[in-house]
Image 1: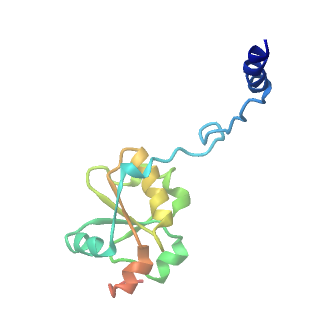
Image 2 (image 1 turned 180 degrees about the vertical axis):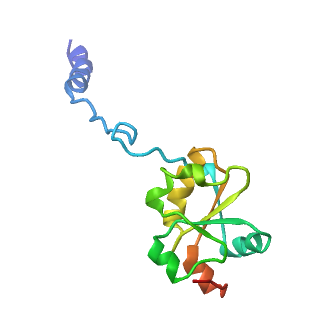
Length: 139
């Protein structure tokens, strides 16, 4: 009898424990769905320089003010806050290199665009890395 009680007591305690709290997912919280980083690659600014020299499409997701202070020649400015709404303006037939100041906003934008079927490549290091490498900018 004591053995039975010793076995049943832990089971009873587990049965009375509170259920784990449900953490709302980003979908239920109304946040935009962003693709997993596995859906796009990240390259260095050196890789971007080679691509730019070959005519790559560069999407700069910094603010217009940051863009005006200096950007890669030929880059198109589309601030991160507008990427989801204006994703249709981003080419779908060729790779798009996405850059920002440091690589954080461009990774977010890359996730958004990749989730919409775009072929995107995030640029790690961003414009900070670009200028540190000695590559030119235009205003």
